[in-house]
Length: 328
Image 1 (cartoon, rainbow, N blue to C red):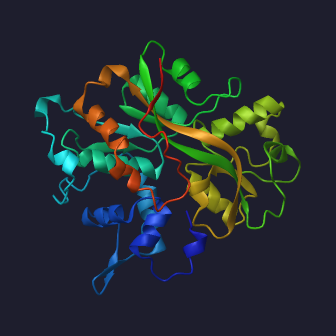
Image 2: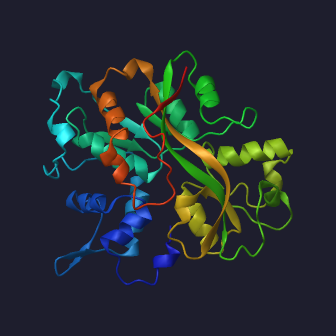
Image 3: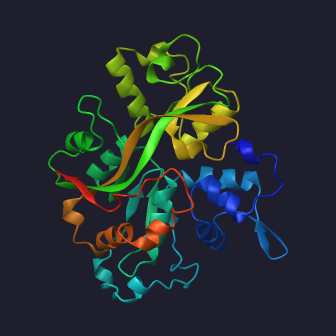
């Protein structure tokens, strides 16, 4: 991906990188300490190139371990709530613990979870919502992030959990509210303002991969409108992340894409047209609720410290974070 608003900068600082990745500035320093992102020094300051950031993003799409501030990279964690709780015996720690999903919020959650006394090293599977639920059903991930809208009921996530996880008692935990809409070129030259505008002659779409929440959202709206996806120019042109489709619109390779607002925050050549508020949730099997790592995850989501990580960032409504919003 290219980052149009920053391409002219010879060097990026830690805050620039944090803004691009939608993570806290301190998390950037952790990535440096763990050797996960390339950098160079100007005096005592870290500096990065756009290529360094792009390489990190592309590499992170694979299944990779996320170590937190209390992991092998350092022991500087000093959270009072965590110091007060003893770590469970090692035999209760699961062999692998994988969180599926693509938002930077999940990377920060993985970092906190690794550092928590009840936590453990976490793997991240950068997969779409639909495939994440299937992976949860198969036991390939232990937590699946999902934002799948059902056009018949108007509900998020619960209808898909019921269909894709048959026979499994599941808990849905709210992460955040986000805003979904259209990425368009600066100034919106084609005056695209609604789902119906995607079906009119002219605009070229760049689509998300099958199974991504934004792709399902588009397909459900097209179904309700009685429009076949293949009739839309560019419908079969797929990309693997919201940042990639937003960047493609910014470069003029497409006229429009669907995604959430945060993906275009740092792109000066892209405007965002809000259309729909969405629920971004976690699906967890109830049979895993007694695992210390799951208890730690819920505690982190409900903590003020974790919420404060997102105070400088726009695009997240955290009013229900950590609440159980549905069960099957």
